[in-house]
Length: 338
Image (cartoon, rainbow, N blue to C red; front, top):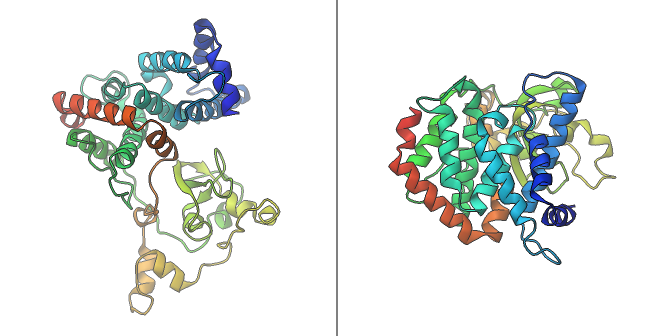
């Protein structure tokens, strides 16, 4: 699919690219019709495919892989970031696509400036609605920095320094912490036991090993128990039910790991997950009060597409990160976001 899309983009005229871009970035916020929901779902998939196209070098007849079309898309996304980044079903994938394109084509400084402009002093409209997109942008940047500059991965979803740009890291952390909600206790069963197929707000993860990708994934407990040792990536916090628990009946025939958390996970396993020795008298209490902050400590926190970018375009990414760090320091991104 990636190769076919890259080939199509490579032979596409700019006016055709602009039409596709217009559809992809169309304002759908607030629309509740079935057609609008279908458009959001389609845009989410298109953005993911385009992220693959931008993250992997093309081969064959079109070595540029639609590079000129990708540059047009980046230009249009930069010019209208306040319109398309409004939180909706597709906004996570669009923000990631924006960061990928900017990283590849040396525009992270301009992209970062436009994102900070949404939430900094003088920002127009409701700043609150842009907090999550801004956090997602800088989380991708931090992940890319760890990979490109060979920094150790963090266990918590906190953001490390970006090259020489402490201002970027501080700004990102400030955004993430600004509206951090209270976290519920980490429970010892899959969330599907409580939610069934009802969509419920929660953190969830993709498992690339088991094919739980795009809009399918697993809850926090299943990510750590059922999918331990798999290629796991954090997706987001959104309305979701756990596909690991929901599809246990078909897991074996689909070559996936069956859910192990539909019945309570043993206390010793829970203690191990929470870093508490089972023999300690306070172990049970520690497990009962473990929060989703602990739950966020998944072994691999580097973004999947950031990993692709670091392998396929390391020099471009390093140059883009340095440019962003320089601009962040000069323009005081951190103080702009306080």
